Length: 307
Image 1 (tube, rainbow, N blue to C red):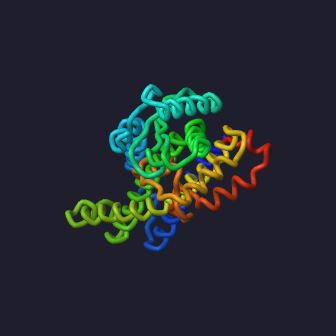
Image 2: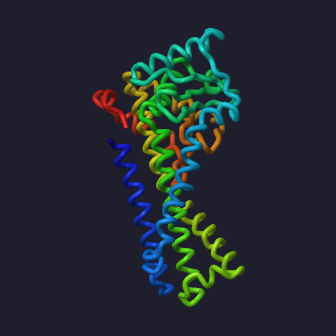
Image 3: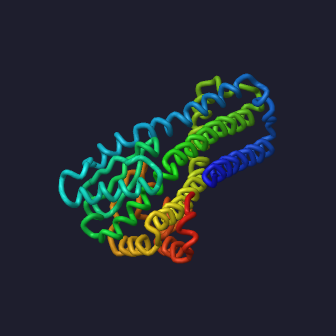
């Protein structure tokens, strides 16, 4: 329920922000936006924006496992490869059972300490850990990291983040076209379409769309990364719930603070375990903030910590 509330709040905020910007620019240029709203173009524009905005996010989500496994050189394991692999598979299986989801695919990839979860559906996810994190963490610390990733899976974070990205993309595309229309109308003396039909006007119109998309995408990223940081706190708390104590997760985070974390692709960076300093555009809170949040948990929190 919390995830749904955050999902709607974020999208309402995006609409409100872009609507305010549109209103201010219309007033500044003296353009009547109802001219566009009453035209037959607006329905097609909204449909186009939705199709383009959602398509990229949905396709990326559906192909996430395949793309990430290839790009990160992940090696899927079933436990028959050796003692370490067997421990990983058994631990993930135990945590999956506690989290109430089906056993995910387990993989190891070469690289510095990190771990991530991905997949379009929580009952067919992928949980991967780096060779570096296996070598440099204790069994209990690594178990906490796996609990963190399994919490991402159980909470459906990959799907929620992709849906939010898709809806935000839709609004960014739609309002970018609307504001490009506003500016073009002002430049052409409010003569609808005249400016856009000329060769120079056509180029200017699409340049404006590109500029507005970059600007709104930049602002929308603040909201998306805010949600990503909230999700990281929830996954840390979920690890504490699965292990019955926040101590292993605190120890794992402290260990990460003394290691050089591995770099993940942008498409799964938000689902990794490691993060740097907190900023408006950071996908993870600082390690200090995460440790502080875990330290303040009560035993009651361990068992109800679910995003």
